[in-house]
Amino acid sequence: MVRSGRIEKALFEDVLFGSANLSSTAFYGSRICNCRFVDANLRSTLLGYEGSRFSECLFERVSFQMARGIRSEWDDCVFVDCDFDGFDFGAASFVNCTFKGEVRGAWFRGGFALESDQKKFGKPRKNAMEGVDFSNAELRDVTFSNCCPLEKVKLPVDGDHLFLGSWPSSLDLLTVESRGLPQETRNEVSIFVDSYSHHASSQSQYIINVRDVREQYSNDSAAMIVNFLNGQTQNALERARNE
Image 1 (tube, helix red, strand yellow):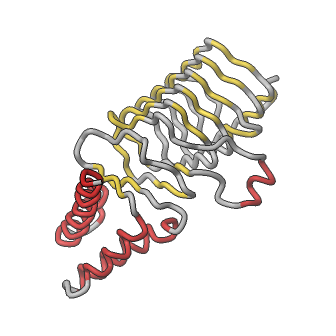
Image 2: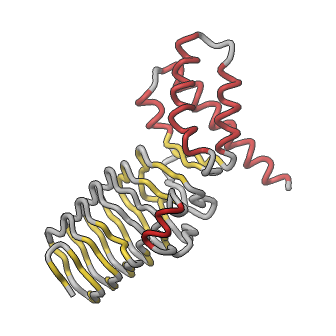
């Protein structure tokens, strides 16, 4: 059923949403299968009430600005050159999804941030990030939190992205390594660490785009941060090879 601003218990199959304006629409318990969203407006949409599921869908040049994923389920979907700025996926789950182009400002979580959210919205499907492919994407200012698993994710192949498997300890060690450096560098390292520490207690793994670091900090500070994190990545790979 489609009502003003609400899509409830609906099934869409093989539909082309070309230049469709669905801004501020709420999806309730719906199934969207093998559909194409091209140049569509999904700004401020609420996509996952009652576990709405998107399967085998293409999203191309879609605006998801300030959308909310609630507990949506995404299976075998492809996202190409979409605008994710401010899109909090919430307790959404992903299976075999591919992202292409710039992914800027998205927030991926392993579950709800608060227990009260689960009581309000219901129990979400576990988000294992199984088969998620970022190999042809660029992650810019992307946030990961709430135990979002990243070890099975395919990283971008551009060489600018680092996978940190022990993220909280990496931040602690970075602070230690900055001691004895010039005050300006220590200050910027402190800002970097503080900006990520809030979520680090619930997020053991992280993906950092070194371009974000180089654009946001001075040359000396960025070089120190990037070199340290790259060293952490190389050390982890070496340990894995020796096990």
